[in-house]
Amino acid sequence: MRSAWTVVLAAILTFALATGAAAGVKVNAWTGLTGDDKGRFEEMIKAFNTSQGEVEVVPSFYSWDLLHSKLVASAQTGGAPEMLLMWVTVVPEMVRMQALQPMDELLGEAGIKADDFVPRAWSLGLVGGKRYGVPMDTHILGMCYNTELFEKAGLDPKKPPVTMDEFVSAAKKLTTGPNQWGVAIPSSTAWPVRYWMGFLAQQGGKMFTDDLKKAAFNDAKGKAAFQFLSDLIHVHKVAPPVMTDINKAFLTKQAAMILIGPWMINSAVRQEGLKFNTAPMPKIFGQFATWGMSHQLVLGKQPDRAKQIAAMKFIRYMSENSLTWVKGGQAPARRSILASAEFKAMPLWNAFTPGIQPESGWILNPPIKAQTKVFTHDPASPLVAAWESIVQKKKTVDQALADAEKGMNAILAEP
Image (tube, rainbow, N blue to C red):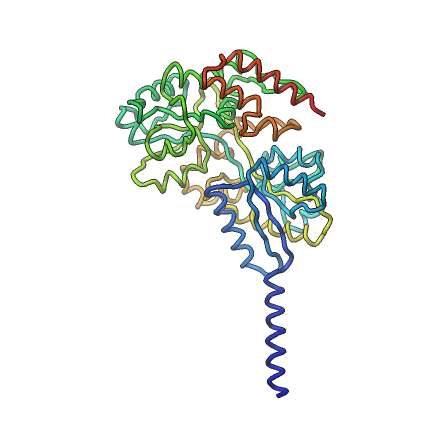
């Protein structure tokens, strides 16, 4: 009998220890990912959870806009998640709203060092002299183009267009009817605004005044950038006037070129019968500049030191193993991955990598307070509304930018 009880007690103890170890310190991880990168994020969390028993990471996925508002509300009620993956340009706004936790004192304990990262990506994690983010990646917009359609149009697929004239000329040759366009541009969302931001920067233009208090884009350079995009649709007629899904258009060969990021690569590789290549953003206005971003790993505002340490352990793991993440459609922020033989064997990524393309041409959302209002995909953004009115021919470029300037200044004047 005693022997039987010993066996039972040992089994109970073993079970308790096993379940306790499996659970560990719970870390809630929020982000706004979708598509391939969401799958890679989940894959990495699963690998981390199974690699040790001290920390259990539980992911939650929201739309980016909802993520930001939900974080602020959660921080105000004391229920912020332990960590998040978010766009670096939103980090200052979330810091001002007291939704994020600085991590300076935790970096050494976590074994995370500045020298491990692309300098600009690392510097972006600083707000007010304190570190709030560790870069998970970098990425910039470039171009995907159909090499088969290039050959059929008499174009050299090894020489993608670089200048404005080359781009327009190629797009005309690649437009053969209602089912094949030279290029596809979204009719709405923030993506055309991001193209415009790059083209504005290519001319040396600015979105805002140096003090970030007023719009500065309603000038000849801002108008020229939007006019170029509009002319592709309405003058050159090389892009469809209504376009809701440029990814699908490219995958189904309805569009020979699209301006996109590295997250498109895997979908294109998987698409049966699709022959394609990638190239840097064309120098439409003479010099290289293109919109880009960095996802940063941050800590939610909460006082539990044990949870902060657990979250930092997870952050270090994600950074050190971020080649898995890069393969999902991003570009490296970590120097060792950028220099690795495995990444060098991924040439399709080169066009989208600030560590390879001129880093000076990497244009981010300017650090205004109202990131979530100005750079949303929603027409509530004056710039998205401007593009929609241009595409729909409701306003001229001049009218649209004048109205966007008024709307932007009203937002910038908000306390």
